[in-house]
Structure formats: C-alpha cells, structure tokens
Image (cartoon, rainbow, N blue to C red; front, side, top):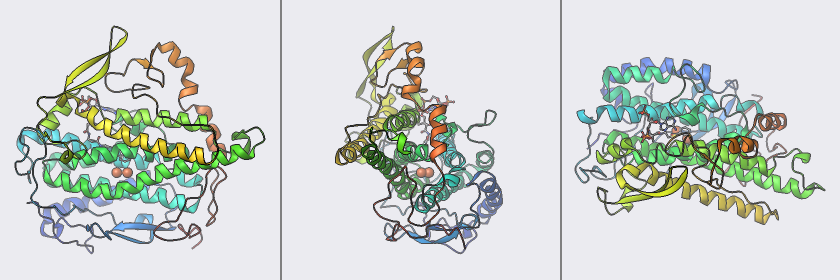
Length: 475
Ligand code: BYC
Ligand code: FE
Ligand code: FE
C-alpha cells in the first residue's frame, strides 16, 4: 500500500508525502523550488504580484473541505504536493495483469513508458500558464481575474505534482526532466512545449474560456485515465489533481455560456440584430473559436490507431475513463469500428480494441462536450435567439492521427486542400478576429462591474457576492 502520511503544512513545501522523512528527496525538491519561482516570475501572470487575490489553496485531501480560501499574493502561493488517500488496496485496473496489486515502485520494464507519460502530462501544466500570461491586462471583471489566477496557480501545483513523481521515482533522469520542464516555452520554435495545443496562442478571453472548456477538459480525461494507472503514486496524484480540475472546466463552460447569453442580449437590442455593432462577440466568431480549440484538443488524445495506447493499456499504465464501469478489463478480443481514408474515400474499418484506446477515451470526451453544447443552445433558446452552435466533426482540422494530412469540412466530408483554404476564414479563428477581440477587451477592475461583451455569473465564489473584491487592486 502506498504511504500517504498526514498533511504537513508548515514545511517549505506543504505535502502529505512524508517529505520530512526523506531528506534527500526534500533537498532535491527544495533546490528545484527557486528555479520554479524564477520560471513563475518570468513566465507566470504578467504583473499583479502585489495584489491580494481571493484564492483557494489545498490544505488537506479529504473530499470535503480540502480547500482554504483567503487573500494571497501570487508569489506567496503555497504550492504543495498531495496524494489522494487510497480507497482500499490498490490494484492494476486494466490490461494483462488486471486485478494484481498495484506497483508502489516503478517496474523496470515500464520505466521509459511511465517517464514519457508523466513528462508529457507535466509539460502541459506550465505551458498553459505561459499561454495565459497576458490575460490579466484585459480581464472582464475582478471575478474573472481571480478565476484566471486560480487556474494559473493550480496548473503550477499540477507541475509540482508531476515533478514530485519524477524526483522520487526516476533518480537522475527525473531531475533532468524536471529541469527541462522549466526550459521549454509555449510557442518557442527552438524549444516548444510537447503537445500541439500548448503551443497555440491564447491571446484573449474568448480563447481563454474555450481553452479551459476544451483543452482543460482533455486534461480531465487524461488525468482520469491515469488515475486508473497500476503505478499507485501516479493514480493517487492524478486523483487529487482532478478535484482541482473541476473548477477550471467550470470557468470555461460558464465563461462561454455568459458570452453567449450577452451576445443574445445584444442581438436583441440592436435594430439589425448586429451583435458586433453593439461591441459584442458575434455567434460566427464564437463558432470559429469552438472549431479552433475543439479540434486542437481532439489532437491531444493522440492517434485513433495507436501502438502506444495499446501498450499503455496492456501494461496497466493507463486505463479508460471510469475503467470500473467496463466489464472486460483486458480488452483482448473486441474491435472498434471507425472511418478511415482509403483511396480518397472514407471507409469503415475494424481495429483491435486495444489499439483504439485513444479513440475510446476521445468518445467519452466528445460526449461531454456535446452535453455542454446542448446547454449553451438551451441558453440561446431561452434568450429567444435562433442561432444554434455545434461541434465540428472530429475529422475537421486535425493534426494528429489518421485524419491529419487530409482535409474535411466541419460536417466531416472529405474536401480538397484548396477548398479548405478557401473556407478557412469562415471556419477557424483569423488574425482579424483576434484584432477585433483585442479591440473590445479593455480591463474592468471595479468590483461588481463586467465588460460589455459578457454577462455576469449567476453567483460568486465560495458564497461571496458577485461584487466582492476578488482582487484588491488598491491595497
Ligand atoms: N501534439 O500513438 P500516438 C492537461 C505524438 S492536458 C504533438 O498517436 P499516443 C492540461 C506522440 O507523443 C492532458 N504530438 O499517441 C490541459 C507520439 O510521439 P512519439 C495532458 C502528439 O502516444 C489544460 C506520436 O505523436 N496529459 O493536463 O497514443 C491546461 C504518435 O503518438 C500529439 C497527457 O497528455 C499532439 N497533440 O497518445 C493544463 C497524458 N498527440 O512518441 C493542463 C500523457 C500525439 O512518436 N500523454 N503526439 O515521438 C499520453 O498519454 C500520450 O502521450 C498522448 C498521445 C495521449 C498525448
Ligand atoms: Fe492541470
Ligand atoms: Fe486545468
């Protein structure tokens, strides 16, 4: 059974992994701490470092009340290392060894695969902080500014969660990887972040909400798959990360809902139903933003037919979403049917189930996104707008997997490259869109006030009113 000790909040690095009993590990992490802070200062939120922010900090791991809310200045945030308490004896959840006891040390034969998974997961966390670095300067309200910073500090903590695993279980290699995680930079041509979506610019708040809606949601499904891992420390670490992740998804889903609500209001108010004439965000632009971030986020699940996915599942390193709900945890027999491109046409093909595990996880993600779309369309209906938003086909605008290198319209029909390029500005965010969004996104820092292009939230944070001073701009 994996050791989860009591929570030590007074240590330099708050933790429940018994750091005080492991001086070597503690020294290594304390050496990494100032390097992390240097990265945060260079690449974390630009400015606002002297402003108290009403933030939640993890202080325990019990399902009720793990979070403490108070005013904190960003550089003083206490990034900690927390594992969820195991619910009974841990077992390998899937693959050839399903049902056997989970590993508390790294099995030699899985060392490289586990290292790769952990480093890939880790890399996304600082990347997203880098992508969101400038957004504080155009926040639509103090409520939203606070949510941005909440997401940022927790992504920082998620990096800590993975760096702990690298330091504790991978020796010298792990420490080197932890260094490199602070060297790569989102969008840098020479040392980019590992996965595609994390090198795309997130220049304004429409992209921020779409990113937390669609890209953080990939995070939810990947973390859920890793929380089924037979490597116990990874499973327990990602389980606790998921409790924080829920708020990131809330920020994205409700943020887009609030924009949609406001746009519907402006559409109604304008004599010609012209949302832009009222300084709002028109529905076509919202749709292009959905298309953009949804397609990059679909790429994050990897190839539809993947040897890696098959190996990860077979060796019990990564399960499916809620593996418990499946009856057969070995998945040796089944097949998965999916459309593939052959000789310029789409034809259905059966793939051995294990090789389709990325696609199985993507299915759970797509269903969740469809649920959110239904919700937004209900908002449109209630507001009396005739517009309906949709998710593009999962073949549209893909850069990974079997559809990459082919061209599809948002309905999923195969088209030519020329046709795709001719329609690109109708289907995907354009530089002109970004210019327009930047032109309307002026900061609003007065408690209870909101930018013209977004509706207020239904309620505040932690029972506080909407006009609460979530960030103290004048202290
Ligand atoms: N971009 O067999 P394939 C989050 C590479 S988000 C670039 O198709 P596999 C968060 C792949 O690495 C969750 N490269 O894919 C969200 C491989 O390269 P190599 C992050 C890509 O391995 C918001 C090659 O293509 N967590 O937490 O089955 C804010 C062929 O690979 C991409 C994880 O990703 C891409 N999109 O699956 C903050 C979990 N996709 O080895 C945080 C850990 C694939 O040939 N990662 N490639 O050089 C994994 O489980 C797997 O690596 C993936 C890919 C699911 C990402
Ligand atoms: Fe995260
Ligand atoms: Fe997140």
